[in-house]
Image 1 (cartoon, helix red, strand yellow):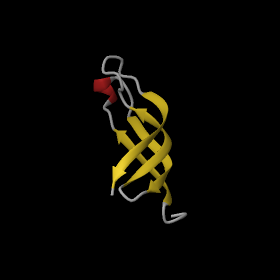
Image 2 (cartoon, one colour):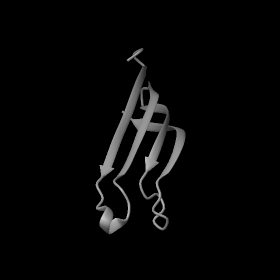
Image 3 (cartoon, helix red, strand yellow):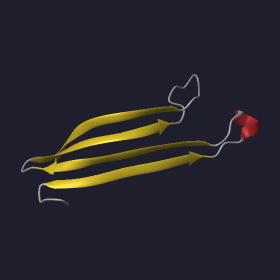
Length: 79
């Protein structure tokens, strides 16, 4: 908490899926997400402003390739 109405936060997760290469024809798969932002506290709710990056396993069901992208956004939350 930087101020009673302002907080800095970070979130992340990692997922590793083991794969039998003889069946699937590929190695173990990993994905993850990292996000950082600020939370502005208000009387009726909170707002988060954030940036991050994500890697998703099999983002497209047909090509079975991981995808990566960056994102920026905001969330409106109730107290």
